[in-house]
Image 1 (cartoon, one colour):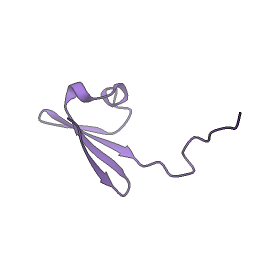
Image 2 (cartoon, helix red, strand yellow):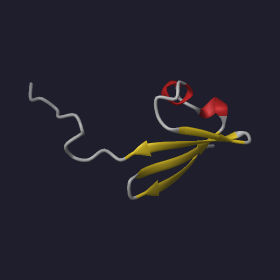
Image 3 (cartoon, one colour):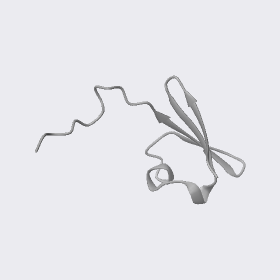
Length: 56
């Protein structure tokens, strides 16, 4: 079970290897291994960075 800690700049996640997503395994996001746990940092998206839904 992954543990998530919400912080002002984003979320710190603690996971085992089998819980990692492909982008985390490929190190496209900041990842640090400590023993058998992986610490993953996910930045918060500001309102300007979120994708806009186009009206159809």
